[in-house]
Image (cartoon, helix red, strand yellow):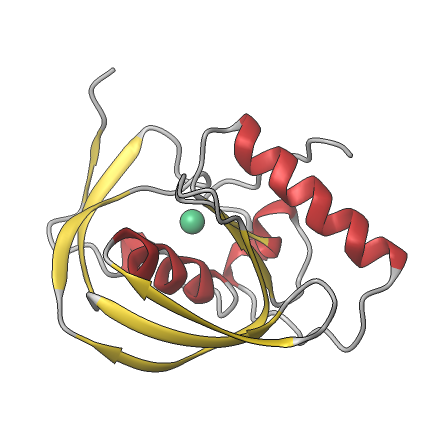
Length: 154
Ligand code: ZN
């Protein structure tokens, strides 16, 4: 268990396409534990492996509903509806931007035991899944922000 360094915008690792995970090794299991620690330490609701410098298709999400998620090789297989709202990212600290996302998604993935799972997300969870899956293909929310980014008020 350890807190890892979160890469920030400008680091080229955030713009790379991540590779699928084939099996859960001890290293991968440690990475997943560390990703949760790192996300909670930074008060985030989601974190993707490239944000800690690892180019693997792994994301962790916890929107505070007592259902922390590990999504390995996630794929959004269905999306509908629309929501427009503020979004932030641990790799762009202190900034937010307005992004339109689907209101509802269905995501196929594997869990930490490499069992196939299907996750349905509505509202914030749908937004978090879309945001984190984008990270695995080198996409940052600022690419989608309609009116650019602005600083958060503290
Ligand atoms: Zn992010």
